[in-house]
Image (tube, rainbow, N blue to C red; front, side, top):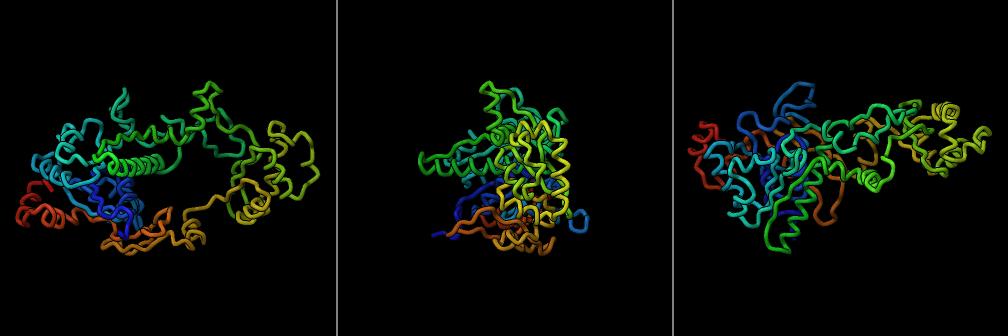
Length: 401
């Protein structure tokens, strides 16, 4: 029995920033050997994106890069050179999975498309991650997280204030949410293709669209619109929303009548809450401006944890808004060992998020920190492909690696 679920699976990652590298990280976390390819001149742009320790930029200390590239080997290679393309094909010939994120047609221009590579390695699974997929009128459009969120109906459902108006400007989710979601979707597709290879005996091409990933996450509302119902709107005037406590904020949502009744019980069944007009969602929405201040006043007397646990006892959907520091120190995550120390030769010893799952027989392991730029060139080029050290020097001098 292997110690890790994907032990023995070889992955080549030719991606940058978040989506593709996160896909590779998820596979590496389960034991696949992932070789990350970076451009010799500067590497993955994620190396230049913070946060950095003490806010001092350093290509080996980017928190973003360190996180999405743990458990990988790292080499430098420029496939735009003839020698680089030849070496890329040598690597792909002995690989189970290739992940790439060039614009559609980019790998074909390099002579590294799926048809070419699978001709030399029929078992190859190749996953391409692009904003809109490999075909269609938008296939060549460049895109950022902001565009993707607004191209997927993903921004219409976020409500940020207690009196949020259906017609107010939409807002996007923060950070690299769309990118992480796309990387996760790609990893699932690759696992499916690996399983399929055991059944059909050959690899296949995986076309991942970031836009479709986000549409898929909003599938309930999208399907409701497609069925001819009224297009889903943002939350209208409802009692609740983002509300202030003694030590921060909580968010309260009361879409159903029994949840309102639970809140009334939590508040001690005050006389003003017995008005029959407040018994239904419609009635409460008609009187939100008189109800909201009363609920505000009641919640303001508690801390976040106090009102959270009180609401919990009465089945009221209420969540404490927690800062990254609070989440990092949260006893639940600590008890489950979600954060683990990994020592990096330049960045030092830091705590990293691990995996949101636990496999009983092949658990998550931190086998190595994120690679330094070109750290494993000698191990891969000399140890695996048979190049001499003198050849490595010449390849480096020529800008190939």
